[in-house]
Length: 413
Image (cartoon, rainbow, N blue to C red):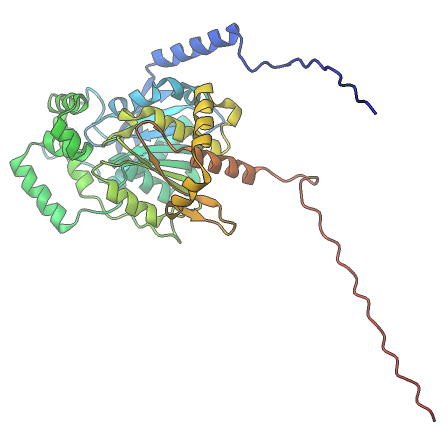
């Protein structure tokens, strides 16, 4: 019996490689985004005026991406290098960006008069709902760094329905202790405000090496026209209270914690990670990132953020760039089962031995193990998909139990 093999020609209706026209459109869109300086607004709140920069449409149905910067920085110096990164343009074109500056921290802000009472961290967090109302956004995805991470955390705890996701970089949820308070008082006498803030932003290794990034930020802070305002914000941050976080009462949205392995607040981020719900928290610890990973490692942070919002259901895997796909493929092939066993201490195992969402991801200088975060995103997408009648498991029919009737033996009368 012989079998003939027939040759079948298959043509692609939608080729994998994009055409020249699509490439031109993408290039024009990327150029338009890069040239977009944003729309600056002064938003009135119950506690004062906030300077806010908007990028994108105000009529988007998706949540806006709202950012809040750290002490010694403004929204531009803190986030522009990240959001102008080439691969980040894929996200920028799908979301509206809202960059919030703390009171008096925007570029060119006038110095506050002597005796001005700067708002507390709690008060600044209470100013954010007015920003959402001003731009008519019901929900946001928050990205905060340092002091901005603390402020967005306070806002999320007070307004859980307004935040769909939270990315916290260099978060410190603890108030200053007595030792820290005494050290701060001593350093305020022996060192300048600029040096104090630099020790907050950068690791000791970066300060000792006096990198170009450290030098540029030292010049940026010391020559700022609103150095008085920066000092007030710095003192307010040091007067923060403890964030009450427990496994039973924590954030109601997905959270991604990010910290550099040499960052000043590495231990604080690890402690915060232990207080959050492991089923909705991802912990990204980046090697060679220093104190500002959004500036030193924008590629790794961009890819992690893509997987994070993909897990929320706002970016399908088909929207990922070709570079991200190639990275994912190489990571999947390099991440063996033996490697997953050796890292089992950093994973919260489910009942079947799989990860449930709590990931400690250590990103090396050349290899970034984001496969775990990607698998979590895919798994969350599958959880969010509604089940159709055909996809639901069929109910097993209960077998009828047949009762055996026992007859009494006939006894002779």
